[in-house]
Image 1 (cartoon, one colour):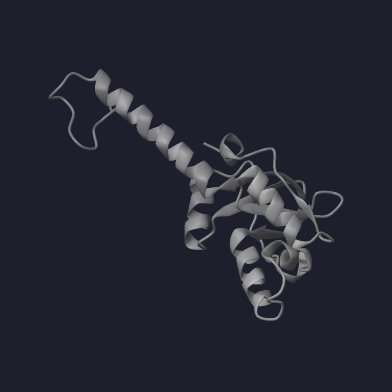
Image 2 (tube, rainbow, N blue to C red; image 1 turned 90 degrees about the vertical axis):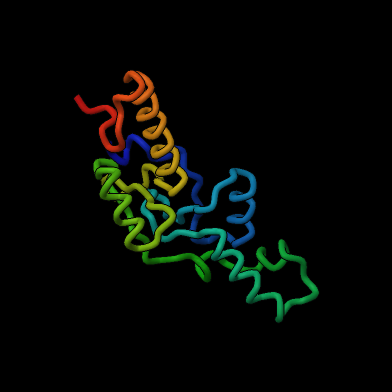
Length: 158
């Protein structure tokens, strides 16, 4: 299975000149945890996640205690908080290779880039959905075998 088979193709993005509040609004509205920052040609410049927003808001609380959370986020430029060293993956990469990279580097997502442009995003949620679907397929193949003939590790083998 390839990354292109699992990735989310409709990716919400931000531009470098936007504020942290806009990232927060997109994340809340779209129910996503990661938003790539791109230039006008969809080249990935960075990535903003919920943890970045929380860290930025907490850093501002002590200096601007009279402002609410949204007002504080409205003052923070994205380029002050986004992660600039973003690992990406090709849509032609295998899911196994992407999973290894995500696990090894403790990443919860990988922007998917083709020809230098963002074409999707692969998240840990996408991986879990694939694992769940795989487990359901294994269960179906085990149920098709008559009782008493299946032992651990032999389901689906001929």
